[in-house]
Amino acid sequence: MTTPKHTRQSASYHELVRLFTDFRAFQEPPEEDGVHDYSPGTMREQLKRLPKYRARLEAIGTAGWSVPELADRDVVRAEMNGMQFDHEVLRPWERDPSFFSVVEASETDVPEREGPRMHGTLCLWTCTFPLGRQALAHVRAKLEAIPAILTHARCTIVATTKDLHFLAIGQKRHESRVLGSLARRMASMHPELVKPAHKAGAAVEQFIGWLERRHGSMPESRDGIGTDEFDWSMKHVHLVPWSWEQQKEIITRELERSWSLLALEEHRNRHLPKLNPPGTIGEWQVRVAKGRADFMSFIRSHDIFTVPDYMEFPGGVPQKLVPAKKRDIFTQVQYHNLLPFNCHMVHWLEKQREARTKRPIRGMSLLYNIWDSRAEGFATAFEETMMHAGMLDAEPRARELVYVLLAFRAARALGDLMMHSRHWSFNEAVDFASANTPRGWVLPRGETAVADLGLYLRQPGYGTSYVVGKTQFDQLMAECMMKRGSTFNLKRFFDGYFACGMIPASLIRKEMAG
Image (cartoon, rainbow, N blue to C red; front, side, top):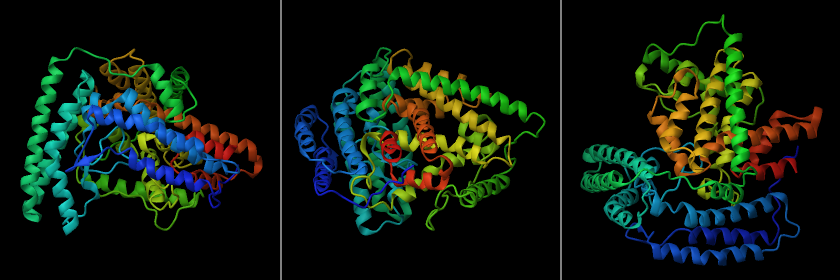
């Protein structure tokens, strides 16, 4: 096992950094009065200019480059491939009305918002209220641009993608609620924002009506991209080494494994008391605090990885319990025991670490969700890894939850594959995830299954990344263990892994395993 070194930089590497900066500026379309231009002519011109950036990349000499520098070159190439894929296959500004996301209330737990999204979204979670003068002007300008953005969207969305329209209707209803809540909140704090917020909300409501009319007149469709395009994206954008067929085999095996191991766990634990949800909000608050403390204590006391002083498990204090009939998979798991889910929320610790990264390319969140096999795959792997490391020894029935979660992620991943091969409709994929998750914990056509499979329809391979990325992590850890033998050290392994940053899992394997 080798801990990556990132101190030395070859002279020509600086050319790569300049190209990366230039390309990032190029990939953002022109903007006027807060509206980015996704019109057909502008998009054609952008794609036409992409080969110039590719030529610059291929002209950079790499003699004497370190493995991390070569990996950064692969990252830049992958982003260029991602732009090409967006233009030639996904075309979200034509096919996917959710692309025009005008407001977001909360921060995502991964490096960037999941799925295709336009430039210029108003991200309220970045704001500190009450707003300062500059922030107030920024929010007002964003709100005032929303009606024009949605007018522009009506001109660019031309595809008859029935399921993608259905998903966008749900998203826009959420955005309407966010804008309504903002208007009410600003009434006493920043009254000058109330009118722009109401106008923005009205524009969103009108857009919903437009989407509903289009959706109602569309024939049934299967909006997946096809297996050839899926394979191209995996190989050239996400740098995943396995095809659609190979991923189907891996994921099917994980689904089978999760169910069989769950059966063994349940048998082993059959004489132990069952895990029960909290009965009161006070009990739930105590459990949440204890779950966070127990997680961080285990990481520190068992030398899992280096925990800097700034790192802490985030989250507020819950104020209410979800009614039993409305509890979906993640609520069910957390209410029975928090530790397995907290392992997946290592996402938030990683965000704290990555926010302090100063590296010129890896210090920025990669575009096109290229990080998915690393972020989601590792978080999924971490659940089972920490279980085997002993985190759940005092709570043996919590081990059952690890396999429930894995089964859900494998079932979702198969839905991702089958939607994009066009074997299944969107609803068939949603129903499969519900039927193939143990204990009936995925509500049929519930919010979680619809949102998750909807994302995977919009972002091919995001659903598979949880399981395929987990497999890549398992593979890397095994290789490093075999290479080091008795000198293998878990903490050194994890610290080296994290030092590689949020790049595709295949590139981390090159850096750590050779």
